[in-house]
Length: 176
Image 1 (cartoon, helix red, strand yellow):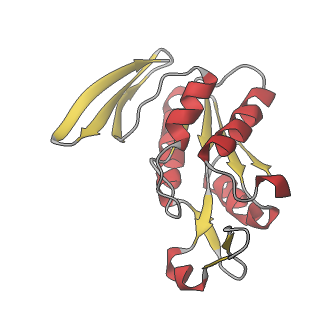
Image 2: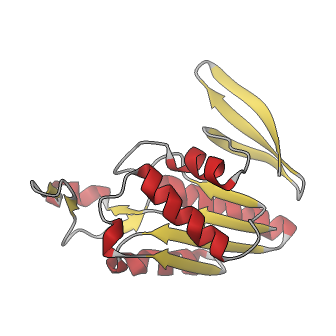
């Protein structure tokens, strides 16, 4: 099974007081702040590694971030990812979610055939939009599930997930 996990480096929450906003560009200044794997993306990576352990295949990590965040990608390899790719260009600075998704989709397409599964954290600790996963699925023409809080079954044909709703949980099946 070919799995891609999108990972966003985010400022270490213990250092958020050091972050400021550039008044001209409206881009966050993160100089001097340690970057870490977005916590919910780490969960997605752990799920991908468990799926690979059961079904075999490959886990690739993809990120759009500044070169200064390479250490975060190295950590994904240390955790067990087979490959990690950083898409980085000054033109990406300050991108909204749609621009981010277009870059990530182009990166995924560069590998050739679409993967069987793309996993993203529900949202990033620094932006909290929750838009990247669903937008990426739409752009790639893949099925999408948001608010997944557990995977009950993953096969090469389908995923059965526990899906969080306002008033509880549902069991949802998506064909790959």
